[in-house]
Length: 167
Image (cartoon, rainbow, N blue to C red; front, top):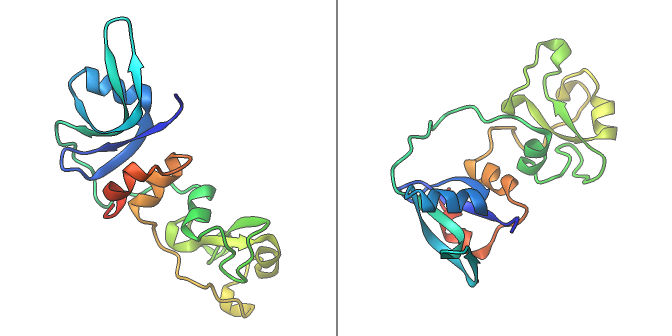
């Protein structure tokens, strides 16, 4: 029963991912409704039989800050950069590199951090990419909200796809 459940706002926009038990508690408290359920599984108690939720929708709208700063983690940086070194394209021995090194005043911000393999990070050291002839394959930026939803779940069920398409 360790499966994840997608939580939608009242407007059907994806909010987050939660556990089945938390989703059921929201449904039982009349704070949410089941939108998509597992076709073959039910959850039984001595007095009730409930569908196994895959997607729930909150009954009241929850205001979500649009441009809030998302927490930066190594895993999120790697996922944003598709688990590839942004200098050479390698997929092993990944580290996080500051484009403008912290020793030179660079901040730990989405726009200054990218994925680099250990050899490229060591080669670049505390220099700027153009000083060593290394240019990132993409410009680092804050990832889309969908990335954080997908990081919260070990796998994305097919039932979620239509709700995440625009998230």
